[in-house]
Image (cartoon, rainbow, N blue to C red):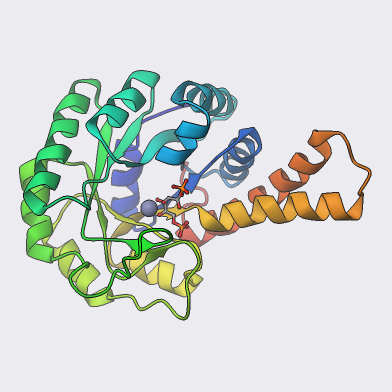
Length: 281
Ligand code: G3H
Ligand code: 13P
Ligand code: ZN
């Protein structure tokens, strides 16, 4: 069924594992991720970015994910990833999303608090969880390197959570979105310091390209949700490309999108195993 992320993440925090949060962009990716979770008896979060809901609106993704979630007994949540405005967050809420990220990390500290709190207050009556971000997870198009000045300050994080009442917090500890150039340099000590003073579940962005070992270490130190986008995109596209090059005369789209789906399912299963959530549903 389709559920909120609240219990999922609290359970993960209590038991010391993480829930994988997978960016989906089409029917096949939705099916693949939900099938992977169902087969491994794991809770799972499907999420769509602002760009993805520009491509096809909230209603399409809500319908796809609801249909997939209703077909399985494991808990499935639908989350807005990097919502960049109050308006977008409210559109997701009205469309039936069960969890929302408001990303005010590009704003000043005070403005981030103000925006995040507004979204929390609007979501609270319907018990929809709200994730905010403090510090900067860089990468991809915005040339922030997550380096100096961009990382989350533990005491600021504590104050931020106290003042906003967000239900989870995305932290910047050196991970990046997209493909890593070189070896990621994670500030694990910082993560532990944040965990000491912040009690809500912590979220790791930029999961693609991190070693299994690094992810497990981050989970040990308090991460309860790990976001994966780029590696699923690569898996889908590789599957499609291979099907098209193996059989150039394919004209039935199901033949190549189905091949993409198989690849995404395998990738999601690997990531769910890394997160340690197998059998937790
Ligand atoms: O963090 C977001 C994911 O990498 C999705 O990227 O904004 O290009 O959809 P996108
Ligand atoms: P990657 O694309 O690096 O996996 O990042 C995913 C993410 O953080 C989505 O919010
Ligand atoms: Zn992210």
